[in-house]
Image (cartoon, rainbow, N blue to C red; front, top):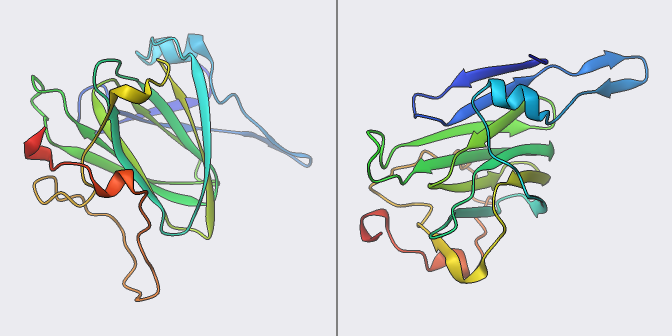
Length: 183
């Protein structure tokens, strides 16, 4: 296997992946994705699209999912710092309604593999962040689903700074998601 290390999350199929860059005086190099190595880790999806976003401090994107065309995702933070969350919405799962959150930065060499039928979101904790993700199905705009980020049942411990100047910034769409128990 390549220079990847898998960390189990306690939620079936949800994985944190650490990688080791090759460092020298010029900088670094690493394989962000190698199908053969990922298959050995049990990640067999064919990724069909790469997405990238840039967001400012306080932006919270999520919690999003696709209803009938679910997507597996492989995500990482290219610049800045984010807190990334995946929520198990597989009704037949023993961890249904559980979440896992992880801080990802441009320096901590971390990726997060999120299988199909998870809701996903992230909060930007640096001045700006560039976030990228591979997905296993194409985006279908009429198939969007979401859950309110501050749902009391999920009780996600977002690391919102205790600073009156820090504001959580949501899209209009993200202010209208239902609660988890309304799914």
